[in-house]
View 1 (cartoon, one colour):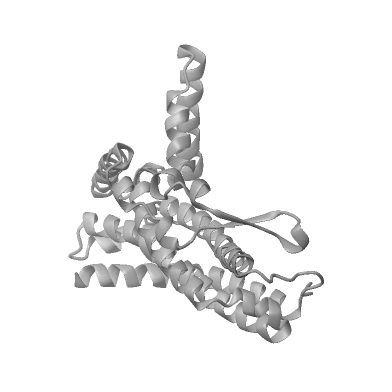
View 2: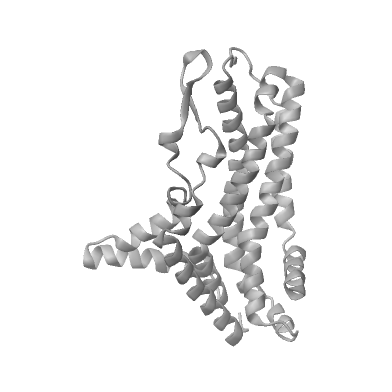
Length: 292
């Protein structure tokens, strides 16, 4: 356990951007909230449902900005982490220490799937709190709508659930990126994308089917369908400002979570098996290769 803590510390030392990027996003959003225009003309929500819907929508929108940045950063980190060790020859130093290659690969996997999301969601939480306070000072009616403690607390549960289930669901994606990172001598991003696209294209041209493309699309884009409940049929739809448009919200975050459905889905465990096989391959390559 102590070795893993030191290995995770090492990742922080070597990847300072994990703190810099969310900090920059937070500062930009807070500055926009402080000095940007707050349009409140006609923005009245007399209904508690409308207030709750707006608050939930805006708080979640704050988090989406960080989620997009986090996904891009995780992709880059997992694809580069083992490749960079061989490129700068630091792998020789780490191999001289009493630390197994398996521990090194697992520490990078944990850092990419757990630590990075925790950092980004912590930044999202702090930013949303500060932005709600600023909006409350600048426009009391709007700020009071956004600052709803029960929604903020429910979002913490939602973020934790999303982090854990996404780490499991995207394990084959992370395993593939680590495998390429441990194998590629150069142009790792091309080796991570072109073979996958080539297989999908070859299947379409020579067999006439799209099985690989559908499996890939399902793994990349349909995570909410497997991890979350059918929100569309549970949502409460209320009128927007002036009766124009609608805003959807669920009664509580608990109605969105579907851990039993996620854990009993064959797709979840197939992904775990495939991801585990790829991670094992990355460990084996790490043990046998130290060249760039």
